Image 1 (cartoon, rainbow, N blue to C red):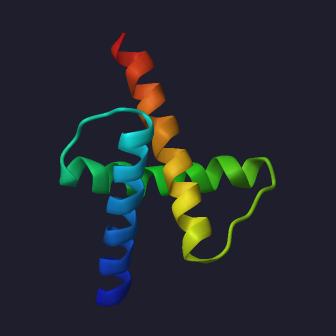
Image 2: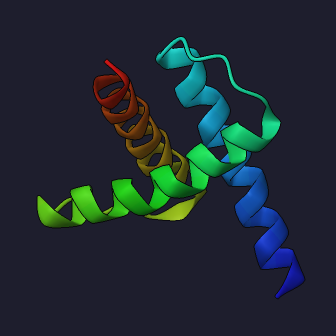
Length: 80
C-alpha cells in the first residue's frame, strides 16, 4: 500500500516534470506531482474514450504526460 503510493507519487512527479518541459511551464516539485497525478487521470479518461490502452510503467508515464500537457493547455486557455 505505502509502496504503491510512493510509486504513484514518483511517476506523477516524473510525468509532471516531463509535461512541464514539453509545455515550457515552470512549476515546483509539488505542482509537478499534482500535474502528473491529475494528468494520469485525465489521460486515462481521454485515451479510454478513444479506445487506446497503455500497459506497463512506460505506458502509464506516456498517458500521464499527455494528460498533464492537456491540463496545462486548458489552464492556460482559462487564464487568458
